[in-house]
Length: 187
Image (cartoon, rainbow, N blue to C red):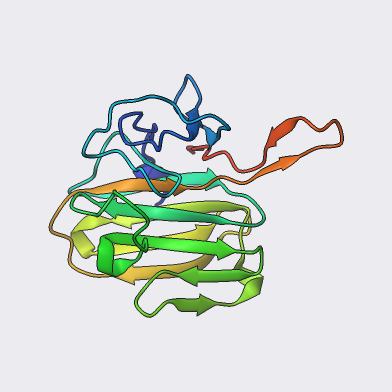
């Protein structure tokens, strides 16, 4: 059922925070060390290290996967009307339906107040399943094939896949290694 809903997701360069480096195929992102001089479009994130997918979804079912880091990340969807400027909380009050891993041990659904999730559910590859018409956004551990969390609400505007703050770590050669890469894997 999920593979029938596979969505091709590419990162929207016009929404990406200027501190993010996005790959040529728009499938990977990481934090850069130099802020890029880019137009300050209304849809561009200028606080959090975020980018959304090019295509927003206003009906039907969609599924995508993202490889995530071991320490800090957020992943989910942004409503078309979501606040993108500054450092507002990326929660349901500001137009986001997201999961967050904090410090590698605290998995949360960013509801208001947040919903703590058990540590055994912490994934390394997340499957996101949007059933727009039935008002559900579900998160799965794509490797263990288990459910993590579902948001349920009536959607009335486009939803855009959201990817936040990939984790970067230095390897033994002291070169930058991309650990979380917003890789979209389709079945």
